[in-house]
Length: 214
Length: 294
Image 1: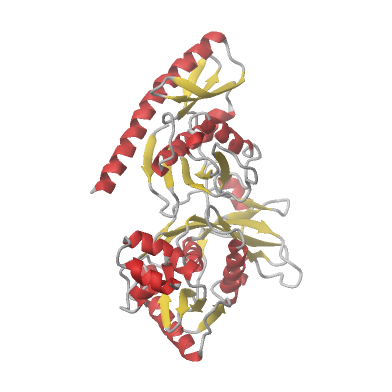
Image 2: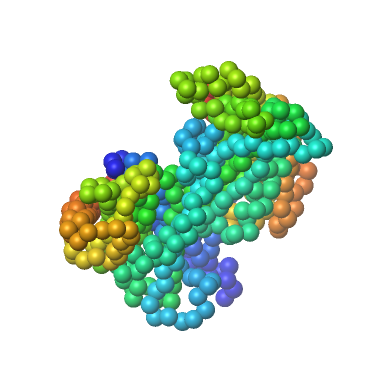
């Protein structure tokens, strides 16, 4: 899919935000915090992360919402908790709210990349930016960043979230039928794509930082 | 030493930002006495307003309205349903505001309800236009408004987005098929051509709704004897008396809303608010007019 738009600072009332368009998938993520949370009754000397992913009613061309998107909130949480330095904001909570404006395939990977950009824009301390890439396999061929139709007829899906500079993986999700050589190839594809995407995200952050300095 | 004295002493030494956080009311009153607001606006002036139409391709009508930083995205989807027996010739509209992020959750249903009341009572939409087959099928419009950024004056932005979305709305083409059910016609020519001539096409082409009496709103804050138009979140949180006036295109009042608060609205204040709303309605009419909306 073509990355068309990646910008930060879309939501002025949030601590940090990012908007991304990958092909037809349009996602906006806002980050609030670190701030006090009414839900946290217990003292904790590490911070808490709260993620929420929602879809607009017009996100998919078919009427109504898809049913398997409730798990995206917890998957986003798992992808992010490995990379955020929670010790830097004890007793407080960071809230990540993601809204999918239009769903064109590879939604979760776009969400994760956009969320890490928004967290960086908010100044939350992290070990590295994280980028997520997904690959579908149909028969013997592998497709990176599948669109909705390709996802519909895939035999297996592979989504990897990694820290490009540290070459470490925070989350790996594999479903369906895969042969070992395919998995190795998919992993290599994802690592390459991640480092490229990581550079693009860094450029975007540098641009917005220098724009705000002027 | 009482607190007001402390403020006087500290104010000369403190930085502006700190003063704004710790003594917000004094910070604002200092500005108000010069008839200005912290962002440089005059008291009766609203923020820059932008409206964009047709952003969402999967919805039948959509619009994005931005008042200052407050951003609202409205989208309408039309579905066919059977009309109720008391009004077999009318369709209906369902409004739903989704407010995400930083706003207290109680505010959203209030704005939703006020919005749907305003749209229905202004007579902007003639529900009879939504009828397909009398007594059997009519359109139901689902209006969804998403708040992408909340910086005060949510109702104004939501109403503007809703009105713009309705003006952008194109009712899809449908036909009545043999089973007596309404089916969407996608417009593909080859195989369906024959079928279309058999079906009784209910709409010949995508049509737009005629909008009369478009409502325009302005929210103001009353504080002592000042009236501030189009408040930001900071202003709303400090001064709690909000008044919203909704006028239609012929300058008649559609709705007036004052939600309690510390300041009382005397009739002079109400008249000033209506006057400000009238000016704002002219501005908004011009903005919508530039996008070819009647």
